[in-house]
Amino acid sequence: MPKGSDWFNFAYVTIAYLALALGMMLFIAIDDIRKNWPKYRCNPMYLPLSKDVQKDFSYCVQNMQANYMGVLLAPITWIMKNIGSLAGNVFSSLQKFRYMISNIRDFIMFIVQSIMGIFANTIIQSQKMAMAVKDSVGKIMGIAVTLLYTMDGSVKTMQSAWNGPPGQMVRAICFRKNTIVELKSGEKVAMDKVKLGDVLSNGTKVYATLEVANANDECFYKVMSKDENDNQKEIFVTGSHYLFCDREKKFVMVKEHPDAVLTEEKEDTFSCLITDNHTIPLGGHMFWDWEDDLVPK
Image (cartoon, rainbow, N blue to C red; front, side, top):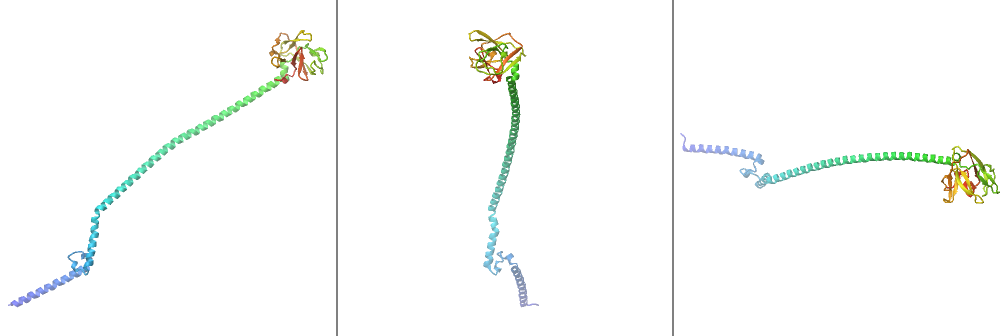
């Protein structure tokens, strides 16, 4: 039967065996902790196992501050995030406002350009119409001027013809054939008897004598004259002949002379002269000769 010392030895061996097992387990756990030291070094329970307690303590304190800094700065981060969001919204609103202003400006420019285009087209059309009217007026003026010059040329042609031999033939600027003409020699002869080269009382030389038919059946005008004895004598001459008027100081047609009187006397033929100075003195009056186109105006 076991003795008390045997039980004591048994207990001693068992305790030693358990202590050895626990020691081995402790050393295995410590070895595992050291192999995974970065995982356990910030745990206060394992800090005594550190090979450099001061270095690991500093590291853990710094790491704790770094991890906790996010929590500390969370309000500031939230505020800055909201400020950034607000700034982004403001910038977006400003961009939209600028876009709206740009659209309004483009719309106003489109309206203004359209209105200016309408005015420009109106002005251009008005200018074209004005140019067309001006061109038409110029053409009308050209036609009018041409017509005026044509009419003026026609009038001058008619005046030239009237003042020339055709007109003279029509006007029949002549005297009665038996009108007495006084020569420079004192001789008195009928006008139809005057010869070429005869010299009249005022020294005028006769260049031509004419006998003209009374184609228009004209009547004579009567102009009173006086001879050297102050006896009244009648001179019968056509109304278109020229006679010097003392009142107007120029040659006028007999029918316009204040001393001429229209008569009913007429003849089939007339007589007239052409002289070197184109004048014919008769009974105190001065008549123009046949070439009345040379009468001074």
